[in-house]
Image 1 (cartoon, rainbow, N blue to C red):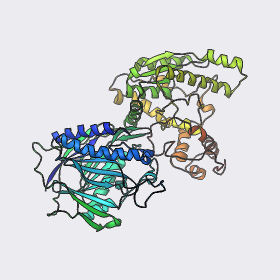
Image 2: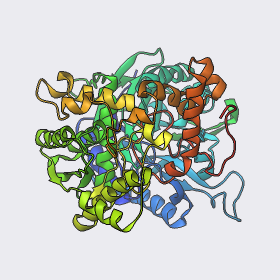
Image 3: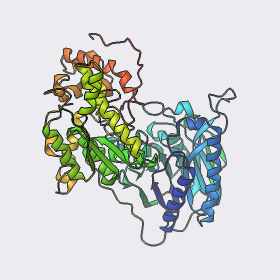
Image 4: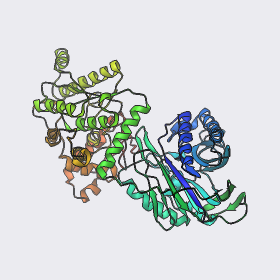
Length: 589
């Protein structure tokens, strides 16, 4: 059996940075080849970054992608890598977009994968299964491919597939079995959500069995707006044996020697007819059997799995870091109240960017407790961030001297003065403002528009309040600190949550206990349960009615909220799209 040394390049591209992404490909291909790799695979749409969204509709961008691919093929050969098969995802098109009056059925923009070899594009594959759920809108952008490309590399027949092709049975993997391939390469832009790594391995095993072939699965890592990609690349044999698996949330070149069945003798046919599921099989010859890799066998190893809390923490840190860095912000600023949400957001920011790039501002009013002020100062001391104190009461008093306000209006005024102050610092010093409301608050509208909701990014947007506490306790635990002092004061974790906008105020004055609230919200928001389903799950009907009414009425607030890292199966934003003007209510509310 031939042995291929396969390199899976788990890297972090940037959407639109074709030159920078090409440099990443060249650099990692060089490293892989120097270590004896004969096949190097990069993630889905590596050359353009992913997802490119409506850039698909720009002819200039499509042309730039195709041109950059041809240039990259030539540059790799110029780098001395002409004999290395390099698999690169990119944006292609064989016709106008479907939105065009000139659209042609079966043609248009393509989510594509190319094999670069010998200074040219040796083969192309167009993604077959197009996801159109959750954060994905690929039916809006791309035309589905109907041909499985099988490339003979080193005497092994290798089928090319892209991301969603793995997540659905049939199609390319069924065609791969019929074509008798020895290896299926699956390149991915698979976003992270909680416990998704527990789903991937069984899924890859099912597809390996379906294809009757080894599957090499490579996923990107990094942040792109709300999405985070966690890597977790792997190679699995047809019988389900996990050969090697990469770590999550880090750049990694997974190198492994894989013994694979030799292709049938003779030159492969250029194309065969319709196979299973109506897919054609196109065969391309790249290279005959290669000498066995020199030296010691390459063994990729098995990266240790992260705990649930560590996994979420790494996702939040990476999402914030890449949003800040890829968009060119020098630093961030956020309000520090001494409470758990701002403390957790500050700890994430410091882990993501370092203390020198984080400014925390305590903005006490007459209702701010002494312990909250002390807790904010203690967090700043522990993390080393730039800490400032800006009392807001004089500014609030100036408004009240000119406006007749009372009750909630005065509470919201304090929040809006704080928002103005943070935005002023942002304008003056160039910081990105972080807002720190959690998913529970966003769900029920427990925030002030243009006040505590002000900001350009929200690290906690998809974090339920009960998970906020879990993450805070984990971050100060020995598992996260190594036995040292954690960044978050115990007082911030242990005290009852309060906005401190009026005397003696607690969140429970307005909301159910968060353990009750989150259970209902998770069912209603993440699980799409209706009123009856929630009651059957054991929730009090009066509490359900109250919570659902708050959620439904707050849609207009959520539509204006800052982006934030997605970690759940259904994040506010792309995942959950409801009309603002909407008179439908669950029965009983």
